[in-house]
Length: 106
Image 1: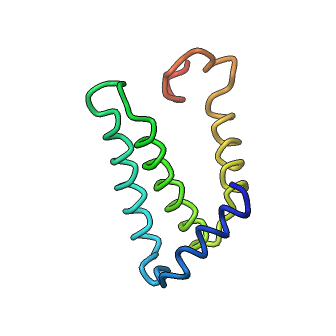
Image 2: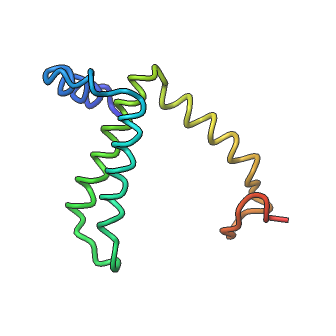
Image 3: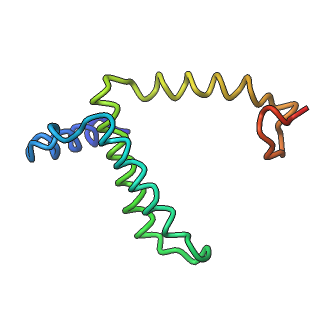
């Protein structure tokens, strides 16, 4: 995410004095709620409204950014650490073209 966007999210929260409500547990709940609203866009079929999808996806991303800030985490660091784990669990030679969970790749 661009620094300008991160700063805008932080300013929005700061201007409204909402940080007081942003405990890690409240942010985790909000991420789940917004994720469910994103999923609702696809509830009955794949005939989705892209504008609604974008709005709900943005809500998820904003809450994730807030949680990163609250917990003092770096998004690149945690994503790259997780990618290293995933690359070990799902080596290309075993996982390519398969949807199996890592413990069922054989």
